[in-house]
Amino acid sequence: MPLVYVAFSGDLILNFTIPSNISLPNAFLKILATIDNHNQKEITTLGLPLGQSFGSVSVRCGIVEISAVHVVQLHSYAGGPILTSSSFEVEWPSFTLKLPANHVAQTQAVTLTFLSTAKCNPLLKRYSFHIELVKDGRDNHSDAQQTVFDVTPISNIVSLRQDIRYPCNIFDTTGNFKAILRNNVNATGIVSQSDPMLVTWSNAYSMEIYSSSIFPCIGHITLVYTNPECIGRNDKIRLYMLTRESGSIAAPYQRKYMLEKNVDPDRTNIFFDCSLFQSRASAYVFEYVSFSSTGMIKKQRELYISTHPDSGKACAITWAVLIGGALAISTLPKTLSIS
Image (tube, rainbow, N blue to C red):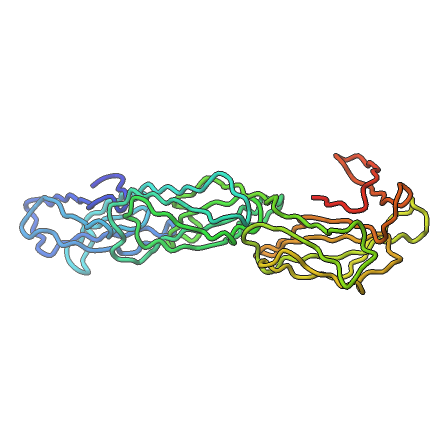
């Protein structure tokens, strides 16, 4: 028998030899797979040709269906002693998974290409293949395990090429994603995996108010926004009020949360009633926040707007902006979008 057999690559041929002076009319071969490095599970049995002291028997492609050490035992008869045994290694056939190298979150679907060299499918179907789409938890500099975003069963491994399409909305966060082929004989084992696909945020987020200040306000303030193609239904726009505890322009701003409104993916604007705004405030901040399916919250854009249409430097908003680790003071216009 071979020292190494590649599963699903063709029939497995087992050769046998019996001393010519021994009669074993009921002899048979038993094949066992070693599971979890110590437990053996019977795969199949094969009767030997009657009256032959040597020859070969064939195990049909697909009967041996897992990568593990397999043992072949020669039994004299059912329930009888083991006359001899031998072992061989079973390896997986070559499987290749290919994802794009880069992707922009929430912009379009992603296609995974699955290539296989297998010549047959599993026949006993005791075990099965599936592909997990996972995100590496180490992206966030933590010890978090991989997050599984999708599981696709693979029932046909014979096709030379299969394309698996992941919908656009699956990729609603950033980081390194990869596809992993597993077999349920070992829940954590990796049969094959793709190279990482780096997912980054889209630049499609924006907010704009077609006014230089909140007041004068008639009825409501209209905020116009843009976002990527396939955002979820949990994105929000939050409103904050900025005030100074003292009248000095040098006094730090106090930021107070007011409310938040859900972003409708089918619209491009949202209304804030004039009654929400107070004339004593120095300015207001609108913040676009996205929520991923895993609960990750990301501030995508901020829009600052003065409360009153003041003019001149004395009435402009002074912001402290942390740039490259150094604190820089800059005077910004009365409306400003910061990414």
